[in-house]
Image: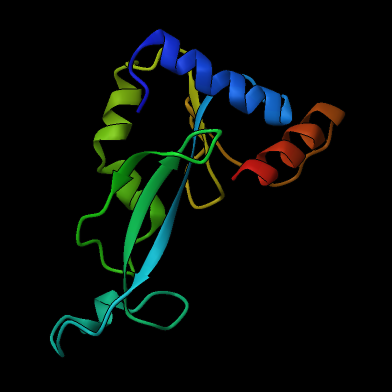
Length: 139
């Protein structure tokens, strides 16, 4: 993750130039990495919602699609994205305000927090509709 103020500003500027979204220093999501079933005792834990065996890997990328943070432990495919984030060092860093007023942009698999923006369920105002459009494009 970008630690220095200069690195953070550069990434924020990239997201702002891309879609006019301020303060964003990363887009976060998880992805399934296909594996063979580990064994009969624990194999079903690794079956994801798409029906195949996998591990779940969390990544954050910058505005120029450079991975800036990766959590690639042996998280079973059945583990929810928010569980991985909740136990990550990244969440602790944001909770400790190590990234100041910067935010991440995530999809509906994550909780909406002051530092993690996710899509709205029912956008009503014009500003909410614009936010929804921008957040879906970036996540």
